Length: 555
Ligand code: PHB
Image 1 (cartoon, rainbow, N blue to C red):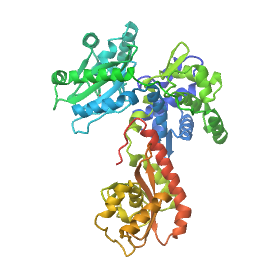
Image 2 (cartoon, rainbow, N blue to C red; image 1 turned 45 degrees about the vertical axis):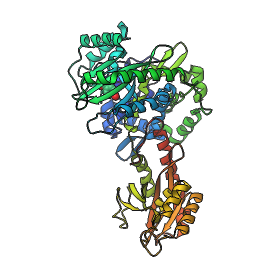
Image 3 (cartoon, rainbow, N blue to C red; image 1 turned 180 degrees about the horizontal axis):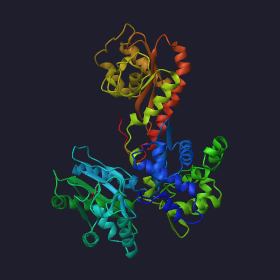
Image 4 (cartoon, protein in one colour; image 1 turned 135 degrees about the vertical axis):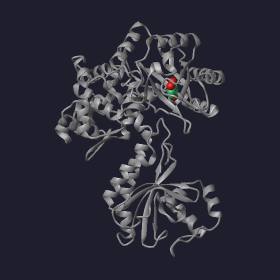
């Protein structure tokens, strides 16, 4: 469903069994994705042509599923939505099996490398190994490019039959300037003969180039990666800039290494261990029923159930029959069947015989904007909620050397600590977040730090003696929190807990800071700590979903 297809057209052409609320909910998610993740309800109303009351019910349902946040005049995509794209990427397995090699190639060539698959008339990214440079245009996982303006595109089209060429022709006639592709600049209408020639050459050569077809300066070289069965599993591309490479020099210097990497990836696929399905599957039908009871008319159960079907797929669950889907979701067969028919009509599911598979289009449901979130962005709404509950400032920080650095903060309007902003540094030993971060270091690392110069006393209360600090950090480690009273500043008291990544490593700390007159130390532990822990748990849940297939920057 591109912006050139109205929702009404999509619904008119749908099979009779298709579930209209599911189509509408998906249209809202697509719009939000194309707009970068945030829209007002009235702009959703205008963009989709849906009635305001329908938009409100859809967003209430999506909010209940934690797929969006609705706050005041804004609807924003939420990290939990990535579970749909994660279901596709884990079922596909390519990012887990080949991502490491793509990253290694990027390091070796010092250029960005991507993995992509075909999606209709486009190329969609499933992995990105991006170099940080000024002159690099990088696309996000889930972004869709028009096939004819990319390097992998001709390789994809090399396998097209007459029907697929016809589909391409129709899509381009419907949107001649490429407006269906929201992440690339508009462009003069594509020339079919030229694309057909490139496809012909790509079939013969086994690789293809993009010489600034997306935009001036961007050059790319792609090769197919075949699965053991011989069909194309994905394309590996190296992307560069004309300040470093022309298309010709890319081919002359890097082609052998790209082909070698593709061959190694094919070997990886041949040697891949069988996919294993996790024991727990998302049985969600009862959950949607409970939400219906609670929210009543505002909750569109058929939308929630339809989206639940997508989450039933995953590693070791890449092809599911109707019976499998019904079992995994707990939905009635008839309900699951209608959801699958709808999802197939919209291009999110393909069917061969009785087997259903997700398509790369599932990534268009929020993945690109959500996949580039930083940890502070993920934490922000949770810090805001925490501040609202405890009426004191909440912050996020990381360890840099012997300091903590604030990476996120939601302050109350009270006047204390106005001088603390994102970027502020304090000596780690005298702060609650610093203690949490120091306590998480290995024993050897902690000892090295304690053996260095004795830290500075910032107030008469600052603990500076190494043996006392050692005991304090050990206690913080055991308790899972740090409480610091007037050691950084007289009159300031704060409590902090760690934030763990998926592997259990402490990557940041969150705290609440307050005036020492506002609560006793006991009240701090009794009233603030549980809420702080809950907030940290929410941040961790969002972080773990987000970093399943992407690296989340700490700041
Ligand atoms: C392309 O323009 O062909 C292209 C761009 C970026 C990529 C891969 C290919 O990551």
